[in-house]
Image (cartoon, rainbow, N blue to C red; front, side):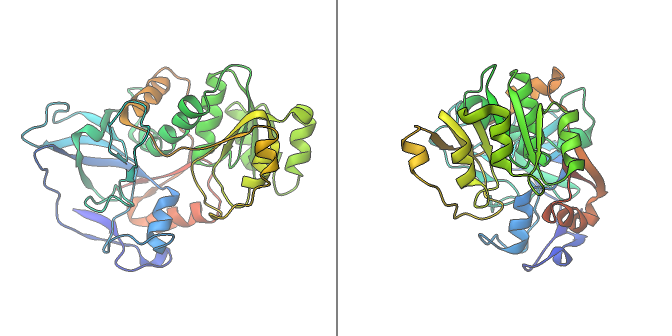
Amino acid sequence: MKALVFEKYGGPEVLEWKDVPDPEPGPNDAVVEVKASAVNYNDIWGRRGAPQEVPLPHISGSDAAGIVTQIGDAVTDVKIGDEVVVHCGRPARGNKEGEGQQYNIWGYDWPALDGAHGEYVCVPSENLAPKPTNLDFEGAASLPLVLVTAWRKLVHKARIKPGDTVLVWGAAGGLGVMAIQIAKMFRADVIAVASSDEKLELCKQIGADHVINRNTQDVRKEVRNIVGRRGVDIVFEHPGQATMGLSVQMASWNGIVVTSGATSGYEGQIDLRHIFFREVELMGSTLGTVFHLQESLDAVQAGYIKPVIHSVLPTKDGGEGQRIVEDDEAVGKVVLVP
């Protein structure tokens, strides 16, 4: 089989489309023919070797949809021919709420397994979920990592409810477009923040009630114009260093700031007075279990959540896909097809 491999750290130019050994399933594994995969920011971190190094040579990719072609002797939960999506977390199941678990991410810091950017993958069968029947493979592959992350953040961590005001940073990216749709499913009022008017137009199309261009507008001032001095009930935070301090300031009394990433850096500065005087709740969230993924895929099947795809590229051109994400050009997800 062929896969997109890097043998040293660097820019997109280190990625090579080359022959690698075919995967062989263990007793509890399934081999999936990858019909589509997607690009996430952890693919870029892995390729850079920062903020942490990954084993070399390395095949990235934490999202995939495809068809089961082989199963191990002990596998009973899937069969050959099933159309599936891959949940990227390990452990996949654990306790249902996923509390007290440290996850490894397939294709990034799950060193025993190669990632999705190839023609075939081998994963534990417990990491597979049925592909929604109303999606093609490209749409399904765009969802798992960002969908399960956004679902757990808003539904299980922030406990979103009708009438909440939710501010979404990076609203036109993979996580952001999921957050907007989940929030609207729960009848919340959504403020979308993105870096261009083009991106904000997409945010409005998928349900955002208010939009703010962070490059041309004062975000804090615009939020106050929308909600007054009360602040927002939930801040969907993931840029990290560049936005965390402001996120805390914009939260309401007893509001929630829920974070799952730090694409702009890890050392955010916070004025702690905004936390203790206004009793703001600051919480972290990482991935989720396959139970969370199935819950969110049920919402996809019901039509509440739809994929948002920026572009579809051949997997061999995955370096260009990473560049698009790295340069903040993507509106939705970049999908790769072998």
